[in-house]
Image (cartoon, rainbow, N blue to C red; front, side, top):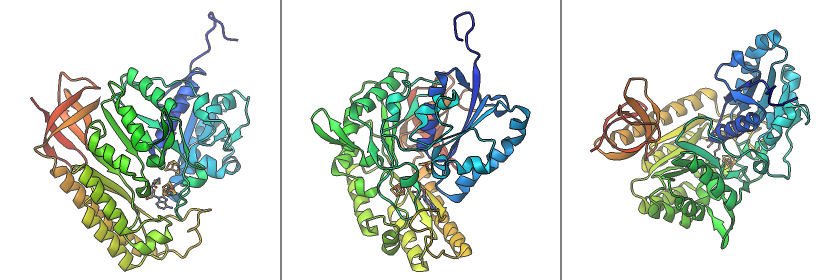
Length: 443
Ligand code: SAH
Ligand code: SF4
Ligand code: F3S
């Protein structure tokens, strides 16, 4: 019973998040949903009443992390059998009850489209394994956003799932079909965040620029959504990720020219610079089309910093294909990029295709990463001497120091003894370090 004389005991929830930013967002929403059940977040797994692992299935190594982490939880569960262990996210979706068969210490398995039911599952009022794609919208059943800690930059998922079916990728299977959230819900969530002190919102989706919805006057594309968000007073910065090249509409490119709040940064995965491999991957564009698109984006916003994702060693990749990738990278000049060795994923079209020799793929990955690292260094050094906006997100380790993000998403360390988290200041960049910049407050 819960009455005022006997408030429910506070229970502690530990969440570990693997994978992409959408999982980070989902973890926040699950924490909020469990908050309504009396759970507060803890950073100390040993103290937790419930451990929730929000998992990623994108590459084999990512998925295997779940099982090693579950193995490490065995002694804790043996000591405290009432400890609840839940598995959420894309491994939960892909493997379902197989997880419990392999690791019987798991109490709950919940997929990315059903986590609004997590509280009911914990109460024993819903099945312990839920991985369907329900027709109801989970966002309509989740509590309103709450600030769990003061953070001036927030994520907001506007689009989920993917219909692109790239030959290597699990996302269409783990996250389901592409769904765009309605305009009014997105604007409401953004306003709620801004009222709670958020000044920067990153719009999220596996294909975020494929977002579309019914607006006040007909069908809106993603550029239109950004224009509407830019009218919210107090929302100083807008970003979005991840985009597909084929969904970069003219309107979105124009938004990069017209909307000062839209930061000059774009993550636009290309995966390969070889037309043969792009076709085998089912990416549906050529290297030349990607390059032309980059030209148009740079014409709209000349200072934009571009980043990307690459896969090396995709089945059938030859030395020539790899050379084509290096050439594309050299031509574009990326601010930074993620590059991965191809990992065959069960259930995807490329799974059974003959693999490239592992040592050859390793060598190619090294070459690509060496070039990308050089470009990252050049991009960062190009910031030295420039005056940039920096939004302070947390205090640094040294007294008086703040850490924030520049317009171009670089981490910037600044001596700013009088500043607070959430201040958006002008900074002169004075130094480039390996993965960050140092700046001084500009007059
Ligand atoms: N929706 C985004 C990316 C989703 S996954 C897009 O379309 O670009 C993030 C990145 O993981 C991908 O861009 C790809 O580079 C990488 N990735 C996906 N599946 C992979 C696999 N099977 N092996 C290696 N890398 C993979
Ligand atoms: Fe995966 Fe391709 Fe969809 Fe991106 S666009 S999520 S890589 S299937
Ligand atoms: Fe991983 Fe799922 Fe994101 S597979 S990358 S957590 S959508």
